[in-house]
Length: 176
Image (cartoon, rainbow, N blue to C red; front, side, top):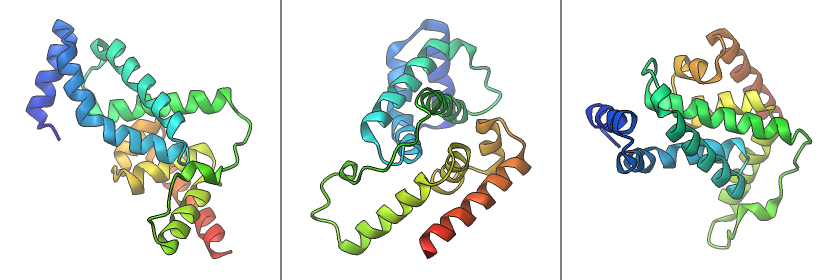
């Protein structure tokens, strides 16, 4: 993880000198978090996650001069990733059923861990897009409510309602 000072230095180099190496360091620092966020939003679809992450970083590189620093660079990236996911979901509005084969080779994992992972992924897939984004940012990405609100461009109260509703839906699914 980059220090705040290193991040500011790299952002300045990107914006002022179009330094691709500096942007590459930013990508290296943030790619795991952005990919994990998108992987949860796509309910485990690694190919889609890779595509959306690539688009996120391309848009960030093209728009780096527009980054005003009103929020952290990470929040700005999450917002771009969220927009990419939302645009994809809007273009492909038909419901996608979770394909168990996408979970990959699990022969070395324990049966209980597999069942738990599948249950959580299935529960996440039952949420609408906004609920899944809110839950993923708040619980999985450990973002504070204020940051989730900024990323989703919603009032904090609306985000709280989404999270509360999503928890109820997930609890109901898991209990059944």
